[in-house]
Amino acid sequence: MVNATKAGIERTPTAQGETHEAQRNVPGVPGFDAADEFEHRGWRFFCSGEQLPDGTFHAVVRYRAPSDDLLRTLRLGNERFASSTDALSQAREMATQWAASNPPGPTSPPA
Image (tube, rainbow, N blue to C red; front, side):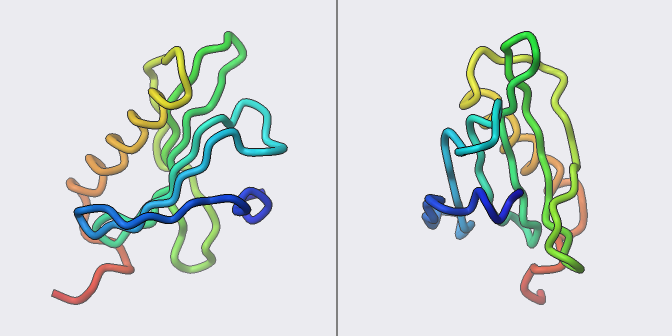
């Protein structure tokens, strides 16, 4: 599924040196309206704002497992948002908070 959604992803560097990919309105994936893939502290996160049956959105944080590059779910947000972009913003915040309280990931440069 993820490889099919890679078309049209825009990669931009951030001031913190992260690699940042963003995509809106992912084609062929209903309710998956906003997504962002970025690297932070050696972890490769894939965050999204996903629509729930009631029409609201929640934040979802996944990471790419270094052994096989598959996406694995890390956290699901409990808060509900009116837009996918608000949920995506919350997912990015959840990912960076998680990375701050865990050891650097496997892609971190040696200290």
